[in-house]
Image (cartoon, rainbow, N blue to C red; front, side, top):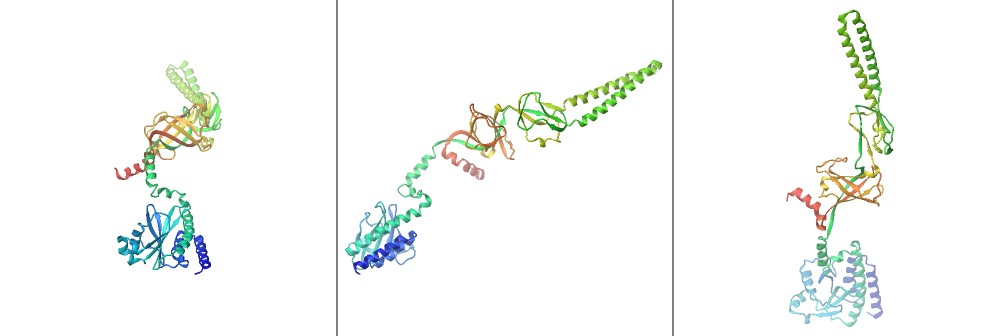
Length: 441
């Protein structure tokens, strides 16, 4: 071959290497297409993995079976390659007794080792070329020049391969593995405050219930939900149609009783026997008067008024109009806006040890970027069914001083902080609880 043809072949192989889409394609080019530049009988590519070399490609093979006798011996032989980044020529006559035992069986007499170097001149691997004729200086110079391109392409494709890991996988290389594992183990002892999340609602901590004063049907409302009222303002009224009818009947009964009493008194003047009927008639009059007074008393309780200033809290007037209510059934709550707090339903599955004055942060759905700070003031000892149908503990918290008070009725998510624990316990608390539920250990 002339120098011009060698240069043309070198440029063609370099172009093929630069066009390789994957590491597998580049490895095939290195061990097979280099033969066009300088003849050889065998070629093998070894990549650096930690402190060892691994056989990844061989000439004439699509893939390497690392458990074949040839691959096993060649991998062991490669561990004794030089560890610098220079081109080396190895001859069978200079081989050690360990290598000579199988060299003649698997390889020709003359080897050429060419390093693959990365961008920072680090060793990426070795390419071994074997043939029967000795290697000359021209062969070494051409291959050294070509393998500089191979090393550049190998480093670029290696970064592309690991790009999906954002470089994390390189941290677990042989050099950094123990350092990273030690750092992870030590991080498990970092103190962190145990916390849980639970649904929450803004409530009035000391709201006063306004209940139905007697059995009846809600007839009308004088206020709207969340409206401010003053003491004495009308809140709602019960339907008085039934009471009105009862009063008319009681009035008629009283009139009849009075008429009967008057007749009995007139008869008593002429008939001594009729005097006993007077007391009976007068007793019936008093009875009818008591019935009328009772009806009037109930009529006076038809209208329900506020006994203090506050905000009327209830869902919707249409939910109550025409609805039968019993005596003592709550219809409205009167609350003071400055007395607002947080009601949290903490499910039994998420429960942690909590103390009074534990920090609580409320993240409202309407203002998720403006959390409110509060402190725990009450925690139920027994679980009950929450509005979502889940067994949960009922927690109440009071907003801290200086906190902007949200409107009563708003909902969100509360984060309740508990004791200080290690990060490892924080991460594995739930998995450990699940394992104990299933195994009982």
